[in-house]
Image (cartoon, rainbow, N blue to C red):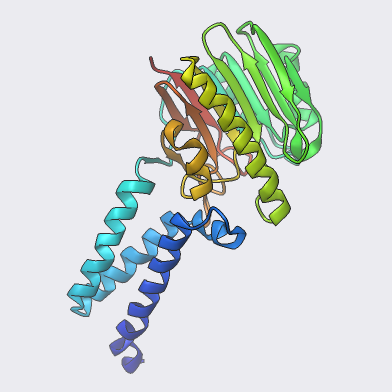
Length: 293
């Protein structure tokens, strides 16, 4: 045991550079690789592991190695992880979004949260018939409702829309587009990215939405894009399409587990305030969104 402790740094040094290499390659070379892209999403976890390793190396007086790791950690934090948010902030909420988890039968806390904050727009994905029925009894008929299990969408609003449509194309998930008098709302739910085909379908979705919002931005039309992207800012693919309109990393999925990820996003071409909800009955935290013009 004493020998192991004495030589622990001989394991930590190469392990640190393996983690660092995985982090760097997955940040910048994930566009064209399904496998590398999967590794890109865990940058906060890589950061924490490197922090622990760098601290241990200081104990072993490996100052240069610890310093080099710290430089990369600083680069990672400043350019990719920050700004970051885990906990709910009290704020006025105009839009409430959540992946409510289709098999969730204990959704009363979600309904109570919505009633408490009284948003103008409620957008849910993976909404089952039970929670939709409950919300209908409170807010009336939704303007959009799609009952397709994992691909279910529902949107309630007391803000009169000018127009709304369900955008359907081949080889990609559906998405919603709702035009109000002062901004356009786009809602989406991407596939999980665990197969090459699903990833390709998501890339088609991202490309299509990016084309729409870039055109709106050129025409000075305000928009907000909200949903479960099943993708993170750490992915080069995500940044390629949405970096200009990204605000912050909101850790929203499996937040009580070590593999938590920021896969739910609110993007816009004007200033908005975003906060996660506290942990409710879904495996995702919701997003609270307010325009801050």
